[in-house]
Amino acid sequence: MTGAITRRHTPLSAAGQGASRRSGIARFTQGLGALALGAVAVFAAPMAAKAQTPVKFTLDWVFQGPTSPFILALDKGYYKEEGLDVTMDPGQGSAGAVQRVATGAYDIGFADVNSLIEYNAKNPGKEILAVFIAYDFPPFGVHTLKKNGIEKPADLAGKKLGAPVFDASFRLFPAFAKKVGLDPKSVEHVNLTPQLREQSLVQGTVDFISGHYFSSILDLKARGVPAEEIVSFNYSDYGMDVYGNGIISSPAMAAKPEVVTAFLRATAKAWKEVAANPQAGIDAVKTRDPLIDEALELERLKLSLDMNVLTPFVKANGMGNVDPERFARSITDVSEAFGLPSAPAPDKVFSDKYLPPKEQRMVAP
Image (cartoon, rainbow, N blue to C red; front, side, top):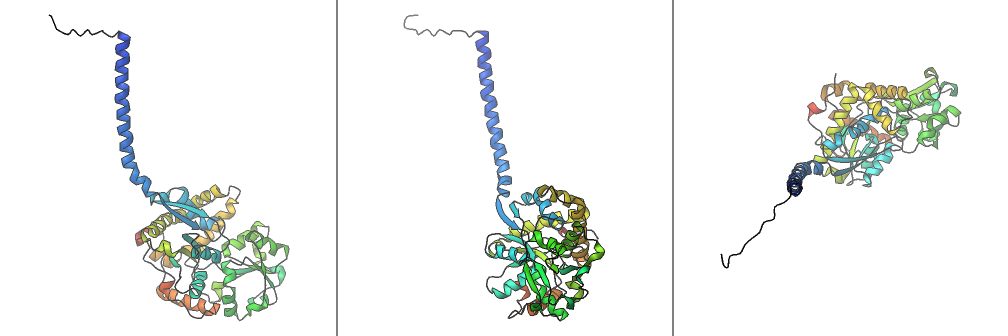
């Protein structure tokens, strides 16, 4: 027909048709992939966001059996599950851990609550709160060897005490001395790093050392000292009914109660797991220090659980909380022993408002 436009279609070859179909399928598949990735991103975004709150955490001491619940919680992702990106560092003593948290260098710490009492009394308006008590019974003491002829606390007068300046037992030594009628100034202090403490006692460069019972006793045994050659004066045997270590929070972190509670919930979960299976705790410590004496650390962990953590009060009330009357009494005793101008109010030292529910803190009887 005149004026008609004729469109000529050139048929594709079989190969061309196959390529076209493959191209279409590829584009369709890519589209589905993009949709799938988008869906994953939508659903994963809240999970990723949940694990983005950074928390800097300091221990009071080196990585050992008693601090294994924190390592376990980190390695097993319990903090991540709570939306926390936790970094953890070892310490060189409780007073140092308190200072780290007080300066804001760390958000949360593990430290002796008695060092906290002293800090808070001297820094009104800048108090650091304990939010979870881990050691319901104190592990503090001084230790010597039979060959040094020290048979009773009075024999410590005129002797050399080897201790890191931040060690909790060293900080509490004046309180112990007051209880036993010893002038603390009659003792010469030799400042030692944690690594040299027990070794210095064995070598005889100091006469006695201060330290947690489960640390010093076992470290001396590891250096070949028979248990029957070790003489210990545990502060609790001389009327010092105080608490031990707890989890402390900086003021800035305390203003984020949901974050603090999440940290405590993950930690309590790990502590319950370690209490039921101490070997799991030691396996966690080995991830930080593969060269540990596994049997020694297991013994250390079991000592701390039996002596300091799983007390009758904890078995009845769960980990983390305090007996209000006992806590108030311990603050008064520590304040008097330290010669503090006044005892801080209990609510300026400890708060239970951050604790997870009791059922989440209960340990097996």
